[in-house]
Each structure stands twice: as C-alpha cells, then as structure tokens.
Image (cartoon, rainbow, N blue to C red; front, side, top):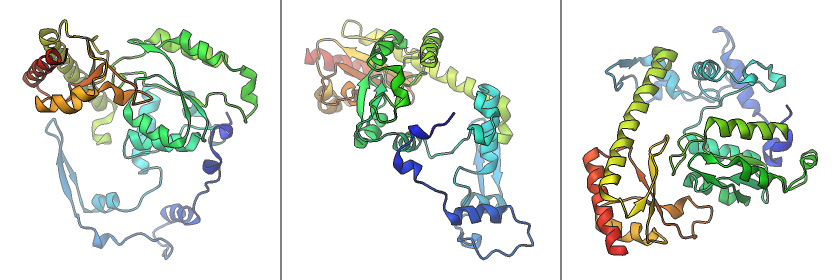
Length: 343
C-alpha cells in the first residue's frame, strides 16, 4: 500500500542525512578500514564504565565495559539493531501482522524505538496532521494525546463510546458524512485517522470488545530481552496482569465501602484507573484541585480528559497502580467526606 498521501508535506520532504548514511556504511565496514568520517565521541571519555542491574525477580544482569561503551555510543536512528530484531520477532510471534512478511518495497513492517508512548504519539501526529485536518477520537481520552494534538491545529471529532469502547454504529454514522469516493481526492476534509485506546483506556479503564473490533474492522475495510526470551516476557506480563487485577479489586472494595450512594463507577476491564462519576457535582475541577488537597487526597479531575478541557465534568480518575489497599481505603474515606460537604 502507498501511504504517501497520508503524510504531511514537511514529513515527505525529509531525507536521510548523508552523514547518517556514511555512518551506517562505516558500521558495515571490515575492521581494517580506518574511518575519519564519523563524528562519534571517544569511548574513553564516557563517565560510566560498567553496571550491575538487579531485576525484580532477583536476576543480576552485568553490563561490562565493551557493552557499556556500545550503550553510550551513538547508534542507528531507529534503535539498537539487536533490540529492533528482538521486538520484530516478538511482534511476529504474538500478532504476525501481514506486513511482517512483505518486502521493503511493499511496505515491510518496521519498528522505531522511542523514549516512550508520548514521544511516539507526537512523532506520528506531526508526520500525519496538517492544520485543519479532521481527526476522529473517542473522549474522554488520555490527556497527553490531547496535548499533542491541539497545537497542530486539527479538528477533533468525538466518537461516542461506552464501557465497551467505541460504538461502531456511532462511528459509522459519523463517517457517513463523507462520500467514500472522496478518498481518491487528496485535497478534502475526510477524516485523516481514528485514535482510540482499545485496551485499558486511560482514564476510563474500558476495553474494546472483540466483537466490536471485528465490526469496526469489517466496515472500515469494506470502505533484558535475550535473557527473558519470549517465554520469560510473557510470564512477566502474566505477573503484571495479576498484580494490577489485585490492585483493581482492592480499589473496587474501597469504593464499595465508602462511595456507595455518592458516586457511580464500573469495574475497569484493563489498565490502572477507576473512572468515577460524582453524584451532585457538575464539575470536579475545584473540588479536586483545591479542596481535595486540603484533605490530603489527590485525583485527576475528569475535565483534563475532555477534548475541550473547559467543559465541566462530574468525573474523576483514580489510579490504583501505586497505592496500597490501606491507602486506597483511606483515600476514598477522605473523598467521601469531601463529597458529602460539597453536596
């Protein structure tokens, strides 16, 4: 598939730096080659020589001098080759996307390592969005996404959702505003892409059901790594899932104990947040940012996750990732007292 009409003019104009290309050539050269081309810092000046890392299960990883020099040295723009290879193999093993087996000229799957999801989102948005483009998004959504989108001057169109994710019928109705033939014309206002968090939505904790995913796909189409290995990685994922399930259950127990009759919520299917609607409070902004701090409890006002943050929200987001069950219990007791005073 040719993706060129999706990207912005600025992104399309980017070309690989000649120095970057020479650097890659140098890396592939035999040891006998004397290179005066690279602008890499001398490893003898690096401040760190070696390191020992202990993982959560007690495994000790030793990073010797040679590996430390490599870790601190400039590397390929997309990431360290061994890391990229491991990540590609993991994607093939877990998901096996069709593009993984494409040739490079067909659009073969590639991976780029970033410093985190926020940087990845920002890079993708800047690559795809021109001012005035229409973007589909289901709100409330991750505030970092909104912070990355707003400066780009795009129009954010809210797609209704519920506790099972985007509502396919609502998405279809929104898309019906445009003629499918318009996709052949590049200069139009047809939505550029759909942004959603299908698993463990932030802040709601909702997950898109398999049936809904299939329905959306259907009408869209119609119109430490080597030490862990895959087995170790998946075992780690299972441990993390079990941990957050216990944390979630502890928060739900605290909510049942203190917030019944004062608020509404449903059990999150994934993620690390409980999305709570406060009864009798039309906007939680002042309640949380001013009065809650006085009670020594802190949550995130729901307005932070709206497309327009000035729109009142009766919701708050509570995270169960770091607090102990005892702390959750105490926090919701304080929140309950605060709500009773407010209403």
